[in-house]
Length: 103
Image (cartoon, rainbow, N blue to C red):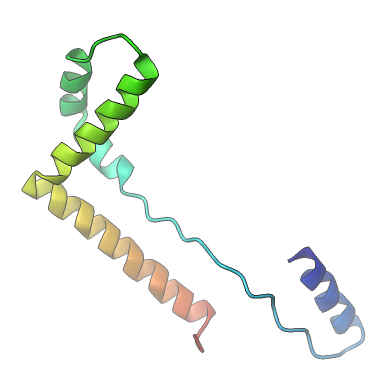
């Protein structure tokens, strides 16, 4: 990308047509983790209280995975996650269409 930007600067100085941008993949984040974990603090506290203190890093990962699965299986949280993800995907898609109208 840096090389392409330099080529664009040179083309602008020479008042020539800018080169086509390089093909690349753009990753757009969809974040749902905070929505579940912040809105259910009491449940996470209960889960931590029942967690053994051996192998703390592994237990933390296991707790997060188990917590996410259990919460996703709860209808209210499942709907909350799906709404959050769907809204973000739609917002990102509309933003992408504004930047790339010919896509």
